[in-house]
Image (cartoon, rainbow over all chains, first blue to last red; front, top):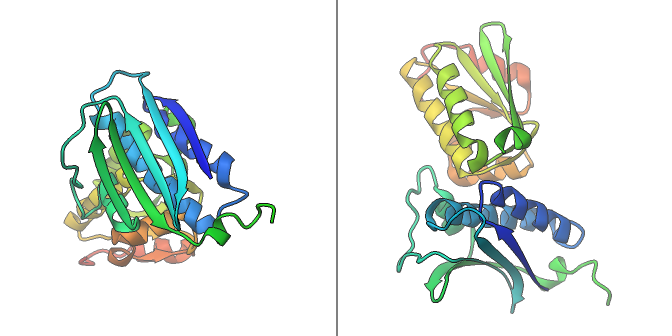
Amino acid sequence: MDDTVTLALSLRAPSDVRGWLKQRYVESMERSLLDDVTLLTSEVVTNAVQHSGCPEGDPLIVRASLVDDALRVEVTDQGIGLAQLTPRSMKPPSGLGFVHLISDRWSSAIGNSFHVWFEINVVTRSLLHRAPA
Amino acid sequence: VGAELGQIETETVGDVFVVNLIGEFDISNADELQGDLERIAGLDRGLVVSLMRTEFLDSHGVRALYRAKETLRGHHRQLVLHVNTASIVRRVLEISGLATEVPCTGVLEDAVSIAARVGVGQ
């Protein structure tokens, strides 16, 4: 599993990424895991829409992959980002607050673009239970 | 964008407003949701927010519910949530802590009955 989609930065991007995740994984991923991945990915994409400073229509790249026994989602925008990304609020949780509460690991990285990623520990078998043996 | 994703329908049951959130609620319709809930919560009547037909609710929606809860508290009332026990929405409510701070029930009649009470502290 290693899938990538490029979205256009806009208020529609969170909905677009939720639709992509549903279409791509509804048949192969456990429902509760897909729910969590959908919520967190939507929140990270929303964060990019709100804070990247990039113009509408800029590319927003979402990659979902399996890394060992973890499902990793990485969202890349073309903004300058922040050296240390932290949730704005934990009560009630902000978008990154939910990422912090639900994921097993998350962080951000600045390079030529800005990356925010999170990982959820999974049992590979449950992720790929419909895959051919 | 927002109107395509989610619809907000309000009805009255006795003296209680029941606000049905239908579809998906995220940043694209967050202002509309927060505005509607704030306005209705300020009317000094009971408020049930029904999430039975809500397919998605993000942190903006949770924040709007918290604000409505605080507004109602100022009127000595409490927000009541009508919600399924197993759904992505329930998961969001539980992770945020809201599910333990306000009454949640899957039975609308119970939700309305609880919301009708005045003088309930939270």
